[in-house]
Image (cartoon, rainbow, N blue to C red; front, side, top):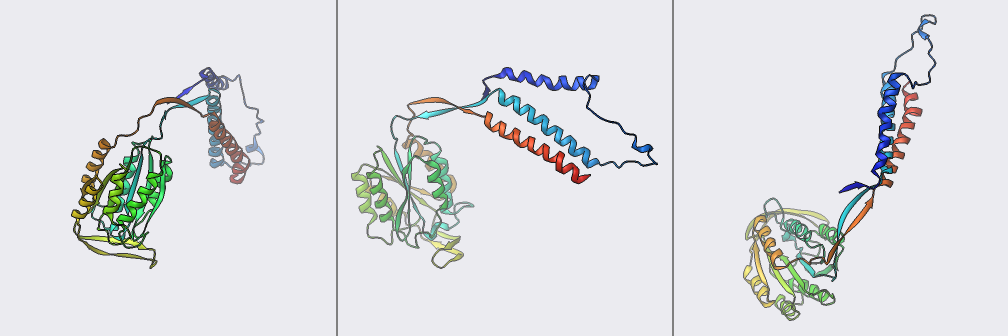
Amino acid sequence: MIHFQRPVFFLLLLLVPAFVLLRRAGVLRAVSLPLPLGNWNGFIPKKYPRVYILHRLSQYMLAAAFILTVTALAEPVRQTAEALYATPGQALMFVIDSSPSMAAQDMGMQTRLGAAKEMIHAFTEQYAGDSFGLTALGSSAAVLIPPTIDLQTFLTRLDQLHAGEFGDGTAIGMGLASAVLHLTQYSAIPSCIILFTDGDNNTGEIHPRAAAEIIKHKKIGFYIIGLGKSGYAPIKYFDPIQQKEISGTLHTVFNEAELQKTARYGNGRYFSAKSPEVLAEIFQHLSQKIPATQPARTVNKLHYLDRTLLLIVLGLGAAAWLIRKIGMQAVS
């Protein structure tokens, strides 16, 4: 919401209609020297409509600059409510399968990976006081973003993640172990791991059940979301190893039984998301199971806008000067 700390300065705007009335009444007149050029040997001066238009445009710019100057003098401020948190909040670590099969387009008009990204964007907007981390897995696994309150950095790296970035395998155990390692180094309590995957663990030195046992031992919340369904689906992604785009039709066999077992070993829960609508329902349920950290209090913060307005005034003044000194001369 915008309000003005010195609204009395808006009285200066009355000078505009007063100036117009005085000009029309003839009290104020522009300095001019009339020359009857049409009578000099039959010479008739040329008319330049573009010059007239540019002249009017410069006048409107100067008028707008005057109005904005008065507005700046009135000291406009925008007031926002800023939440303050007494504790660091909880840490939510998203573990995302980035194997090539995640590029399968069977989540409506989206790929499995794209649907996961979109839902994470919507989910994190509700958790301003919490931290988010990002772990990606393929044939290897890595923590891309440790738990951070910098939501923009988290979302930027999330958007950059693409299918095939970490190879063509699915090291679920390695991904979960990497996430647990970083969460145990984070001081926030509680913490939670949310895994997105569409396949079985087929590589890596750590079995998913072993990693799930550690999650259970550390008392970390644990959820697995299976994306997609068995069958044929179109697929297209860029292979960083072959340096070319791969496209075609993928046939997947979705083994949910093993994912359900992994969730149980970690004292967690498994969800099957075969469509974007079901995925949205799952996240609505998760928002109830994982309540956002509430702020200790809110404070009002003022953002002064007068400097921005004055910069616009300078720009308008410079543009009007250029139009009169350069633009009008070039046209004439």
